[in-house]
Image 1 (tube, rainbow, N blue to C red):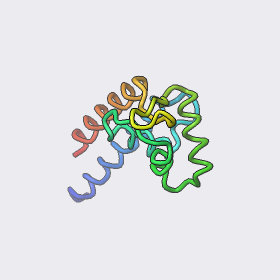
Image 2 (image 1 turned 30 degrees about the vertical axis):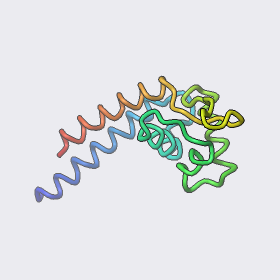
Image 3 (image 1 turned 60 degrees about the horizontal axis):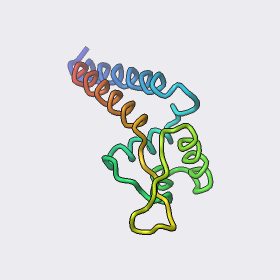
Length: 120
């Protein structure tokens, strides 16, 4: 087997471990869904910056706005996301990552980094 093929196999193995770890981390419901992955990681990338609902909906690109709203509302209900006051417009609210989600994603990303470093 070539070195390139071995690296590919190691990468796929690490990717599968990450998938299992995501499912274990978010095993309290259907949060292992790819759309939650997009929503949660986009929120994590903003490093604590709250976003308008419409921006959060757009993180789940392949969903209709109505379906994205259902996903977002479920994440809010389960405490992964929070609604916070908008300091620029008191009539509106923003969506922020909860400490619970940040803690879980930080640990998950650290796990993924270690697995991919080992694999490659």
